[in-house]
View 1 (spheres, rainbow, N blue to C red):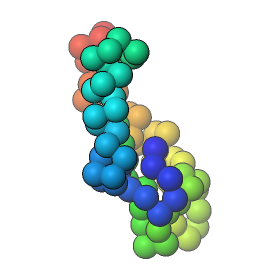
View 2 (view 1 turned 90 degrees about the vertical axis):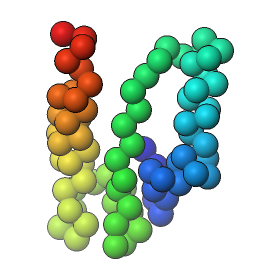
View 3 (view 1 turned 60 degrees about the vertical axis):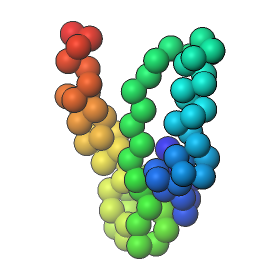
Length: 79
């Protein structure tokens, strides 16, 4: 999850999280993973992943909608 005023795209373009994860997998530090990076940047530069009348229900979106979508898309092979 990206920090306030950051984005999913910047995690890759600036922080190179994709390369960090690839290296960690290649060196056996972690097992292969599926990474889901929702972009929570908004008009106010961020949400703090909380439900808010001003910015929307980000906590619900992340914990329910994104998790359910990822499970539906990627977990079918594990069942």
